[in-house]
Length: 441
Image 1 (cartoon, helix red, strand yellow):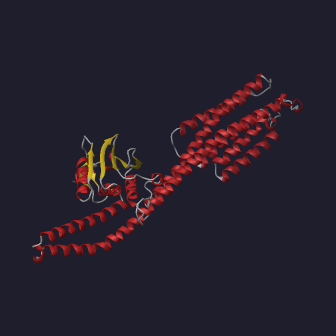
Image 2 (cartoon, one colour):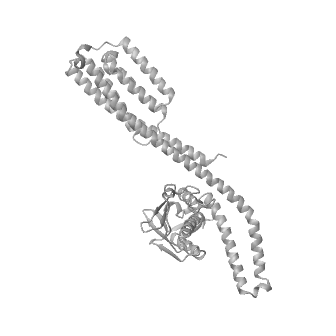
Image 3 (cartoon, helix red, strand yellow):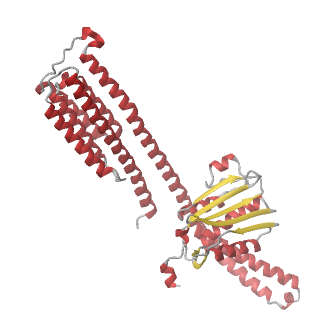
């Protein structure tokens, strides 16, 4: 069976590359409009100022065709459609063909603007794959050779003695400035697109590595659950037998301790099950139908009843209740956040819940020493902890994974008055009770 997670990563990586291709296509469309304006200006100046006899109908026809192609390109690509290398290659070929036609009607290789071919070659080197770039190099070289053989030389005196006052040298200077300015602007934009894509791909690789770590933890937890199942069952039977032994039933303090041991044993089983759910899919088989207020109230009560904390403030600001799925993974995530806060601040911590803009917002704050700057910059990474124990730092890592799987976000900050706050925002659509579960219930 194919790894659906890896397939999803490949698809996302491919979408990043397509997004870069789309941005490059839009840059080509912008550059083409610049070319249209530049050609119109050049034709007007050459005809009126230098009094050159140019075939205006043919040159304007080429210019009109280029404008129609650019309008069609904009209509096709204005939405975020994927753009392949071949499509970019074809777009550049159209630009090369348009430039070649205009040069053919205006002096061919004797036209100083023939050096604009270099712009096409450099753009292809940045945008396209290697074979496409070398093809553009070959085509532009053939176009220059063909223009030198078949085009009519431009009636423009190449009197270099005049220096800057030579019309040909003026044309070369303008061509150089155009090439330089356009390359700086558009190559800079292309490089920013590439850097953005590299950053997104790096984030995807990091996320894939973290999710692979989660899978390994899930396998380890699964093995541990199977190994721990037998001794836990044995201890449960023994404790049950002790509770009914006549020698022990006369001692109320021993019976109370046995009850405590049984409750702690049940808690161990719940912790193992919660880790299994957190390391796997966010919507587990333990999901049940409930409401968001009932779920959070029950979670806060259960956590408070099993922890030693002096002051636990639970502030539920949700005014309008709604049906949701009671998910063990979300429950384990909040328990991890509360346990982390309890270790940092045994005397006081707070859980605040609210709903805003279609999202369930949960804030866990404490009065502890807060996070270090290093931890804040790497929040949610595995084994980032101030506890100094081997294997610590997984609580926030698992919480981050659950939040991300549900389409939410997890963030942390140090409070101005001291202490720290970890916030989780989950879209209500991810935990809302769907109709399928409603009818099944």
